[in-house]
Amino acid sequence: MRVAVIGCTHAGTAAINNILNLYPDAKIDVFEKNDNVSFLSCGIALYVGGVVNDPNGLFYASVEQFEKQGVRMHMNHEVTSCDINNKQLQARDMKTNETKDYNYDKLIITSGSWPVTPPISGSDLENVLLCKNFAHANEIIKRSESVENVVVVGAGYIGVELVEAFEQNGKNVTLIDSEERILNRYLDDTFTAPVETTFTERGVELALGQTVSKFEGTNAVEKVITDKGEYRADLVVMCIGFRPNTELVKGQIDMLGNGAIIVDEYMQTSVKDVYAAGDCCAVNYNATKQPAYIPLATNAVRMGTLVAHNLVTPVLAHPGTQGTSGLKIYNHNIASTGLTESAATLAGLSVDSAYIEDQYRPEFMPENALIQLKLVYEIETHRIVGAQVISDADFTQAINTISVGIANNMTIEQLALTDFFFQPHYNKPVNYLNQVALEAMAKESKKVNKETVPA
Image (spheres, rainbow, N blue to C red):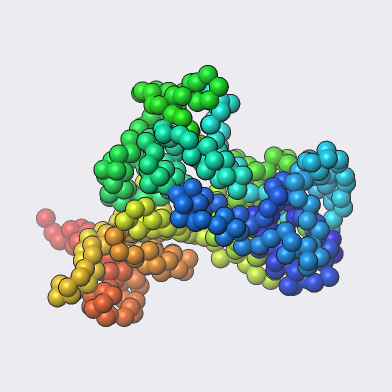
């Protein structure tokens, strides 16, 4: 069995590792534009901030490791065309410019994503950088050494992590985003406001609700111009978001409007023997019961693993995702899963929420911390569809618990009565997860009572 793999970050690496284990006789050809595999881009900010000193720690597989196992690794190779019907692709060696044809029996598309790059005037100036791969990380570190004023465009996870890293490195940092607050896709205002306050206290300028119109400078960038102002910049890092990297197979397999490849629960595309996984794909979103584009490393690893298991026979179905994610910014430990209220409404769901803000230990404990926890649920079914947490203490694992609940269609009543241990070092007799679900139940009971009590 000849297997061709296009791309080798998280999904590709997981697919290859599992194919080697499940089908040791398979002949695997891997085509990767970079000279490395398995780069953990979520560690870029830690690398930039000096938390990670050895960049080799940001890789969990290597070209040499795969080659020792018989995998043909075509590094610095760009797949220039792919004829899916005839099971043939063409790849160009980016060093020699030589092009060759390759045949395969099974094709695995793990081509990942690429940063969104709007057509902003001045984007070609020196020191206007992207943030995605290892080369980008090295370039950001190299160029940031001699600059004072850094502008980060985009207040998603990567953007806010970079802001923290640059600020801790003593830079004057400005964060620009067209939305009115940071992290608005993942968290409600209650959970983003404390982080914005900390940024402001540390001297970060928040230029929110502003859209970048152009970059100005002679050779290197000197200013960022928005629709509401201008900001000094010796270095700009673009973190607006990501798009599926799927132009290669456009028109040959089914995709969403944004180019994300549609796969079934076995990672099979609309064409037989063509599989896809990772950031180039849509995945079933359990909160909405619809396919969605959720580019996360955790999703990519699971999908890559499933491709291998289903490569010959469909045996292991994808359970869907909740889009669960976590973040640590300064003293803030944050995590979320599923939908926020606004995102649920946009998805056409009728939802309500419950919120608690409480000390997590009994009052007699000498040390304590505040936990803020929100639960979003569907009104008609009481099905849990989302949750968020923030605290100076680490309660992020609680969101993993709710993620499991969403995957299994758990209701607020079921969560309220779930068996969680009590120990004063860790929680109260009524666990915070039980407590927020009980709040939701009480809210729903009031609605029922209000409807049934005669006027």
